[in-house]
Length: 78
Image: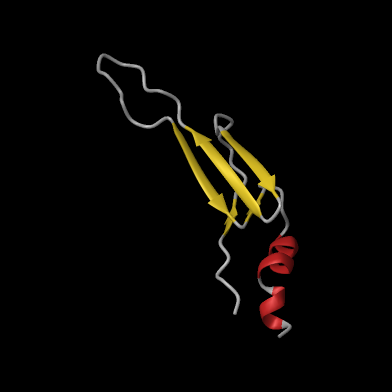
């Protein structure tokens, strides 16, 4: 019996300030998203870095065909 696999697809953005780092290791991928610290007159203790783990992460320039081949093709070919 197979386990459920979770994937993340990053879509292209016009925002040049998007700050993230993707790491691929064997069958796992990790994305680290960083949020700039807010500047102001008050103390900001919110998280600045978030880390999420997936079975795979598709970069912004990944084609729909590549996503299909990795995620759905095996389900159809059974």
